[in-house]
Image (cartoon, rainbow, N blue to C red; front, side, top):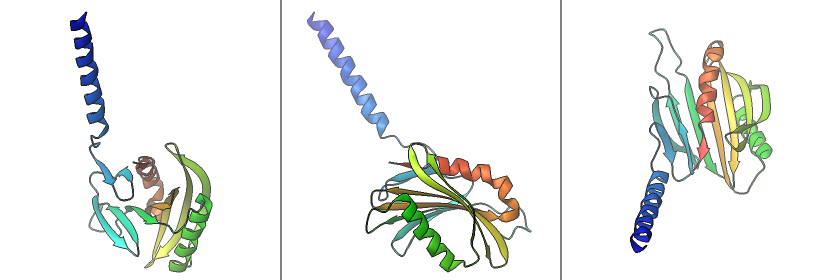
Length: 178
């Protein structure tokens, strides 16, 4: 009887240790940000970099140029910021939209709707604007977690947007809070 209890105890301990260890194993190809407690999968052949800008951390993934004539590299960006209060998702979205319009007065909203990223409520939008003569389209997602705001922007030339839209959505859907 004692040997059965001992075997069962050892088995439970091994399972428990395995479960604890497996919870902390990072997923290959996933970018983790411990300070802002999120992760996301960026395209593997895109160059990523992190910068800080006016109290925000910005993670950019920039595509390689398609050919010698390609003058604009597509990019996926996550701007994460600590907020002074706990805004609603709609308040955060309208604040980012207002700030973006200050930087790009010709910005037009094509679409905006409430969506889910995994189990998280998010705001989705498609915006158009011009930068240095290039007509650009942004597929954007907005999330709020406590006093932190997250702005996921996926940008490309407007004429290439149909080709990149699925790619951008897949990357955005990989976003999760850690």
